[in-house]
Image 1 (cartoon, rainbow, N blue to C red):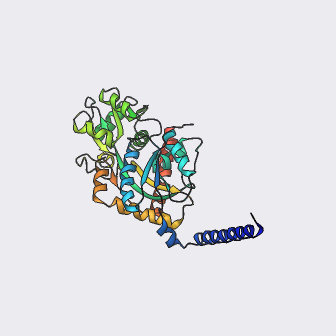
Image 2 (image 1 turned 60 degrees about the horizontal axis):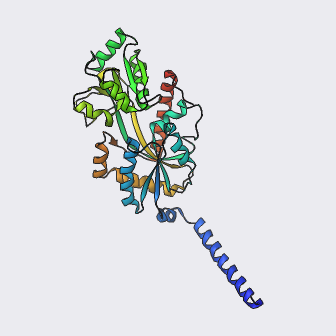
Image 3 (image 1 turned 135 degrees about the horizontal axis):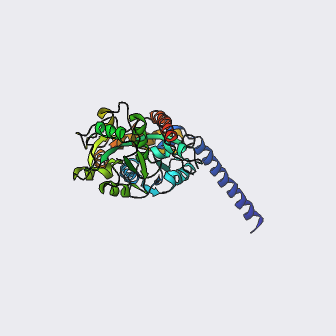
Length: 336
């Protein structure tokens, strides 16, 4: 290379670097509106902290499909199961805060686990920016037909006359199914024995076989057995009756005033995600959750769509954390 060619090369390189620096400065100075307008420019991932096929996964896929159309970019689901949702939660908390990684959180990951696990791999408040709750799922108090109680008042009366004789199953220690039962024990002032299983399915199998008397199961997995007559529905755990089972009372209506336990699901972004991007995501979620086909698909799972502002969602999480923290403490449940 000659001296003149070398000088020309260096001058061109300096000019290119100057242009790149100018572009970088311009990008950094993009106003909020322009930043939101540019987002998303590539596919978005929703981390689901449970296995494929579960309620969390089903809801994420329904919403992800609708968001793909709304945002104009592919929205894909990444299942990171394990440790009661903590493995997926840790992955999402450590993801780049740019709006391209979202997290489908639950009552477990954001209101129960911090009290249940001695060591948490993430802070459910500090490490996440709440977007909106997306669905509430009732738990259904069901009994084997062979049991001598057919409603909540009869159940309470039997439990008080026979302390420690009623066994209630759950999908595992610290699950919303377990803690729904512990909350019932506390508020109804009854002594029942918790029997934890490795998942909801084996617990339901034993309930159908009358090895256990009752269960506070998630609506999607219990409703088929209620419709077939194999289980007796005593009450739903939510504040309002379920449209899927309108003749089944709430536990509060049926004899335990003030009782409410909801398995809820919500969308989060990593903390530090730019505010304009969070606003765009919230608006997109609220819009798709109002769509008739999305509502229908979610309702078919025994769930109810729900949307709110990030501030409302944050306040709700705080109240749920206090509520379930107390229940965990009183139940003595603890996991490493």
